[in-house]
Figure 1 (cartoon, rainbow, N blue to C red):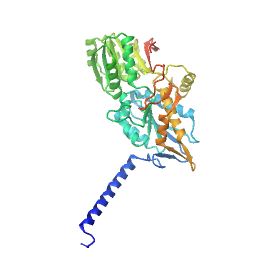
Figure 2 (cartoon, rainbow, N blue to C red):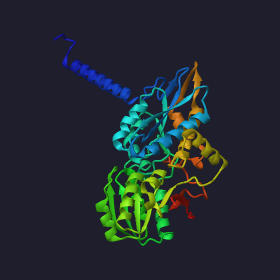
Figure 3 (tube, rainbow, N blue to C red):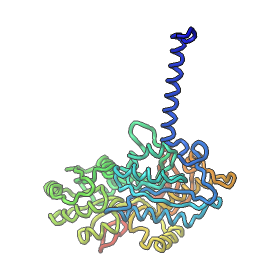
Figure 4 (cartoon, helix red, strand yellow):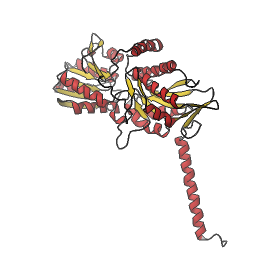
Length: 410
């Protein structure tokens, strides 16, 4: 061994090599995580080349029984993009991905959107189970999500950590809706007992939890089901045996309609109350006469402002169906507006290209304060839309003559 290559120096060299290997591995991880979003430009900056398009993603359920919900959201985002126009001469393109409204579709949809080189933000998902699954992915890539329909409390109040800085929503969470539903059951329906039925996804479970915590009557039973279930015989037997004043449902419309039909067939004559995942035209079609007398709730808007009146016609002309056949169209338009405003505030033309700092854009979106289609839009520290003083956030309907008739309750 040469005199200069003693054991001391071998140790130093070994440590240096180890450090280089660790640094290299970390560098590979950073590349995969996409600190620059994989989109060019500097750190967390998307550079849209001259002639390119700014891309805003929409993650939604675009197939299956809930396709109408996702299509409503996608069409509202496309309409907003068309009407609000370009930014610094660069067109904004809306790109969609089907998340199946299920945790299994969350990551594939996210990766499909993230593969778009000029992606700067995402609208959605309307399904809370998707968001709970995929929030870390978007946060790591510095991509802001603004959901128009995800209502589970845990989405903005995650367990064991601070809220995700990259997530906001233009719809009120179930901590509001579930409380108001319980108040409605107590004071309007006069329910002394209730049976709670729900899907086992984040949405159904979370909304059912809030209702149960706030209902002052007796909860005589509670049971969950997996999405896609069609046979509710065992559950119907449990309900008819307990014979509560009220059956409360937290789920989406296909299962709720099938459950209600089987309940009525079995002779249950009590009240039925469900939320925003059920109040659709599809529910009326699927449940038919069995829907008569059912009570349902959904987030505002309730004010017939000139902006909302114009939006109703514009949406019908663009999408080919009414804006309120499904929930969340107005909230989606506002979600896009918040994103658009945020991009516009920070985007800079540099050498003919458009540079968008994702972190600065996120801050700008958090600071939005404007009158939207669905109401006033501003966000709290958790990314939740703030309550407008003196204005109800949840509205109630009763099915009468095959139509939703708004109820007088605030």
